[in-house]
Amino acid sequence: MSRLDGRVALVTGASRGIGRGIALRLARDGAAVAVNYRFDEAAADQVVAEIAGAGGRALSVSGDVAMAADVASMVNRAVKELGGIHILVNNAGIAADMLTVRLSEEDWDRVVDTDLKGAFLTTKAALRPMMRQRWGRIINIASVVAYTGNAGQASYAAAKAGMVGLTKSVAREVATRGITANAVAPGLIDTEMTQRLPEEIRTWMLDQIPMDKPGAVDDVAAAVAFLAGDEASYITGQVLNVDGGMVML
Image 1 (cartoon, rainbow, N blue to C red):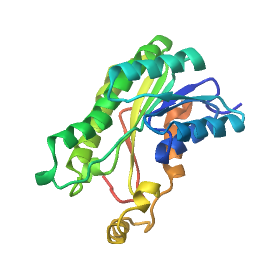
Image 2: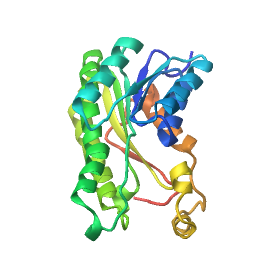
Image 3: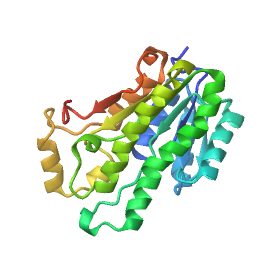
Image 4: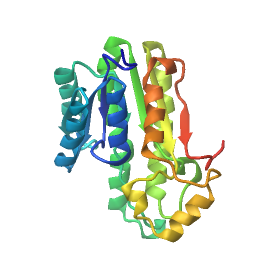
């Protein structure tokens, strides 16, 4: 018997990158997984096929996490077609890198709506079935820039810092209902997005990491898998940095 047998997970932004890795890891640990995507249906279907090919259960669910109606549909499909929702991973996120003086109000709103409002809406929708079953795991994918800030990422850092506050507040609200809420804060993780960074920026970021290397998607997925299981039942309101020592609080 696998550690997450009988659990159903919804992972937002799961068609690629960190979200994809989390979906595959939770499925490997026995969970049925709703793979959320917004644009790339083919990539989401590929994740579903990989899970099914390994003997797991999954379905792809389209939706914009910043739209309440889309979120309700995603959660309802997970409950109806997979049998519930026990684990929510708020991973969907975007960035609009620009110095604050040049950042448009539209780009600010777009980032905060997806990264922070999206986490709020999805959490709110998932909490109802979790409270009825008196068991749940909410895991928010934040970032170390929530602590450090980052030049050119005011909107992204603000949204991720807000996500940390959301995590702690929800943790206090539902602690007596068998539901935990925690965050994972990745540092420099080796993904397609970070591989496209200019070499001088990657070098500068690596200089900030005591381990002197970027992390892997599997490192983040392993942290999420731990927080999703029974072993983490007495951990709530916490932020787990997965950053090679980049930020030490």
